[in-house]
Amino acid sequence: MPTDMERIFVIALVSLLLLLSPQASHSQETPFSPYHAKVQYAGSIGFASVGIGRSFFHEKLETDLFIGYLPEKIGGDHIWTAALKATAIPFKAIPVRSLDWQPLRTGLQLGYTFGEQYFIVEPRDKYERGYYGFPTALHLFLTLGGQVDFTRVEKLQRFGLYYEVNSSAEYLISYIQNPKYLSPGKIFNLALGVRLRL
Image (cartoon, rainbow, N blue to C red):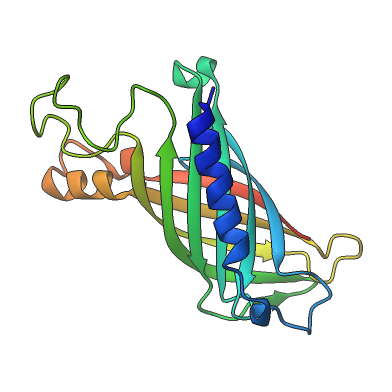
């Protein structure tokens, strides 16, 4: 379970996300607020995760804060993760009958794994200098995906389904250095999620 200090860290991130949200970024053309909630399967934030976020610049940019959990039966231990995501939507949605399809969504995800066994700075008393080379608690991911919104479906206008593929910077660097050892299937992760406009 997360410690008190880790809970305070997450609450501070949520507060920052909400406080830094300029009111001017909300378009008056939509009846929904710029805020949204998400439920996600996989995607390097545990087996399942929940998040809150906000859209900016007429829905050209999204920021999200997620809390994820990986059960012991799947991960070998109870693992809690927090992730801060920034997603850019560079193109207008493509209308497909009663749906709107966003074919390209790309961004960055900063993930933090809670637990005493994970570190940001390599402990000198446990490992030789450079033994890991990367922090085990903090990871930067590159994301690429899309989203389908039920824009003109009665009673489902608030909902959207999204899909993402991501890879950590560590895996990408390791793959470039040693492509024979790591296959693309080992370095990329799939995420599927539901977005609800609030």
